[in-house]
Length: 567
Image (cartoon, rainbow, N blue to C red; front, side, top):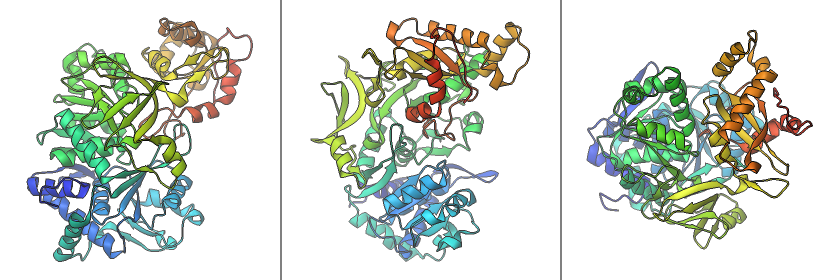
């Protein structure tokens, strides 16, 4: 490899350090303050970690599990694993102990890196399910892990690593690493089934990073605020690896609860997010009477934002139009874990609301006869870990079958019309794309979340999470006494009010797509309950399962009177 080789993530990082060594790399929450290392200082931490992992016996191709919330150490660990030649298997920090243990077993990891006591407690509770001989490295000290075997802190791992050792580990990886090397195994969120380990190479991730950077015109002067989980491919590529490639400044948010404060503090120029958050911001601005003030909308994001990249779930047209018209453009993109992830995106110079943009450079897209979106290029995964049959079904003749239904318009913009596995077929054989109907419903300010159901039935019904504040205001208008939410959502007058709004929101769709009956829910869908993925997409099968009794009640006679249920 030459000094400016960028074929692997390790060479991409080393090239960045060589070019930007003395520049501040970013700002990362730590205790009550922030760590703000230069690229050179970050590199020293990475190289110490890599050498420490090699000392522990990590060999090229070994899987190393990483279970942590977003923090500087997550990045140091990822780059350290890659520089040691290992394969990073990041596991979502919100998962329960048995789920984490299952993924540790499935990938055959020999080492687990954990953030701290919270994650350690999960594994201690399922110690009987863990493979023997595991070693552990923790970012923060953890009592009790020694009961599971070898355990040390990241500081212990890095201690005593000399300059020559650091140089040797880096030089060996730069000399021996190739684009074909496996970089990561990412377990899919499982919206429609059991998670599968997606295998992505260095070449997959580098190609997608560089093509995305070219498309979005990112420079070293940009400041990015990142809040989505780095364990998910969206933030991993679009926030983290694009930061490395561009030399811009990365700031990690402290969490969702403080995100609006972090936006005002960091004043980013770039921000990746999901539609759920944008919807929350729009509703908050509306409630504050500031929705029609472009300056207030821009200031909500810090006042310097030039690009919002929206992904992870469909961006409703009304949201895209709301922010664009107020000088905060939100560009919708599209991708999958299996495609590293970006397939297409709208941009500053080419934006068509209602689409997910044009394919990025090097990425091919075509539509199969049945409407399924296929993609081919250097971004496509090598397959699913230990699942050759699933791999053969997903990749045929080099084309990745995405499972999404869509169309390419005359200008080359891709439009998603549904998820193949989520298409609902009614008893009459009519096909409903629930995502489209749900997007129309959540345009109503009184509807926070919605899930449509009609499989094998004569008509569609809906599970509705109302805006509880607005529902309370309607209750007062109806003369109802103050009631807890659990009782409020059962009030016939309020259910009828919400049914009227549902019917009005769907005034433009066909008769068989109308939602005839609804249930109001007393709590929103959440990641913790397993109803949303890490990027806040609906886990439809889980929601149907949890609310099966509620859904069944909606089909009991009479089919015209609205009902409400508490799960």
